[in-house]
Length: 266
Length: 266
Image (cartoon, rainbow over all chains, first blue to last red; front, side, top):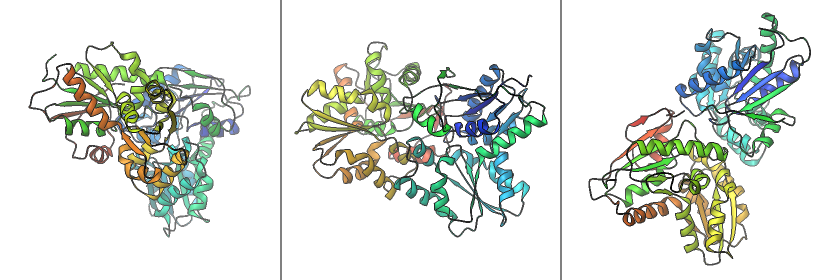
């Protein structure tokens, strides 16, 4: 395993580009291969079995590209598969759940934490159980927000509809006394202003993308895998591309997306 | 080909159950095999290439079950693939576009017609060009409504959010003078009350599910394939099942869904 090999980043679609964006900012000496399984997106409303199978295929695809590490930048995939994947692959695999949990535990003072995500992520109970393992007397209030992903993909980042949907989903946190809210889906950082206004002051939003980039830096250092210059490049591979891809991806990545490579996985 | 063989009904997910519901009501002497490609749903936001490949595999799966006819109860699949599929398979294949077009042309007096659907259906231009082929001086106003499908799947059939989203998407029809609006997606019949209120009186909503059931009856009669009693049964096959499936499917089918069979296609 050479330090000059790229880091693989995987997501069910293009939401993981928010994680790639943080990785590019924090790790200028690394290069990246991003794989988005856009032919089968979304995972968040599918069964655990399907998610496991798709994720295993996707990680294998990245390993075939010679990556030195894989970041599973998808909350649903991280929560459904990561425990089982430990040790199955020859490179370190970092998910987005553990970093988010660590940040939430550090942020809360009242030990009352909200977690929002797709139905798959919330149903898995991954955030809830990992937070409770570290803070056994915490109160964790989970809430699935299935419409947030299509709203972001439609580009309705801050519209009256978005605010009304946020009010519906986040009503569960009214008077709930939480002081930290985990954004447990890679799409949600784009909705931060609306979510922050809805839950009000005094609630810290935990952005898994930022926390995951920190975790990746830590693991690279720990395993002696950190690159030493010549980084900053990234290559995007997708299993399908719809005409709206470019606009949405640019919004997620915060910069123009270069040419993409299409592969068939299904 | 025996008249006692079932009719195959295919959709990218479970939206096609609205078509199955109409078929069961109109054709009591027939039995049905429904296949929903729930592992890869939705098709409406994916590329034409992906939709073609997935649809070909799905039709083949139904043929392997010995169906005497295939109904492609998915607007996206019908619009992307049907012209190419003509003659490729040994049984009649009926889509949802042509029946909707015929009903819209019959309904309009002012020759001003709206068409709503997924981005894939609208982008394909299938409704637009087929209507213009029959009514060359018609004005057709298409509008993609990507949030309607997730709203229906979330069960938000008539909520303030649903009404606000409908107002946004259907604003294009204010003062546009249309007198017919094609519901070009199998999910949309569930939103009929909200859509009708939003576009106001004097606009006839064309429900492809109802029109397709009529077309299937016509083709069965024409080809001498109509069943003669012993029908009313249906079997549901899916490529994935999420925990929310039962509730949503019951809403679409208007009755309890029997045991389903899971198959792997991907």
